[in-house]
Image 1 (cartoon, one colour):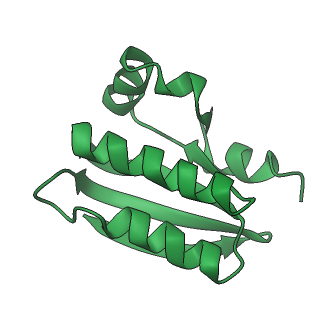
Image 2: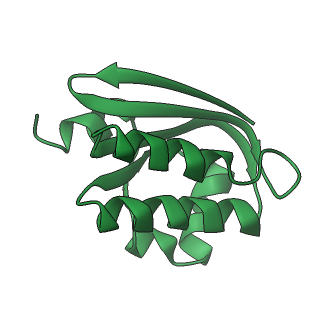
Image 3: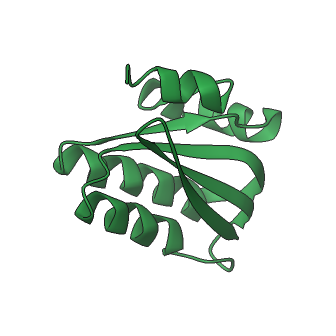
Length: 113
């Protein structure tokens, strides 16, 4: 799994690519989001456009990011999930928990900045 961070209009976008699984970078995404929150970045978009695979540990990690942000008064939103990832989020009912957007631009815009 690869993570890249950038700032888009005051919103921190984390590009997640590769596989988010137990064997591929377990804990790295949550560590990244926790670090961003500690630095004062409260508006975070996880860009999932290049995420090719997600297992139950990966789902748990995304939920942990969401929970950590809420505890710190921040927000994590999802963007550009592919069909497989989107279907998994629907199946697990996690789309009722997250704000998810078809594009990164829509997710960034949703923060109203």
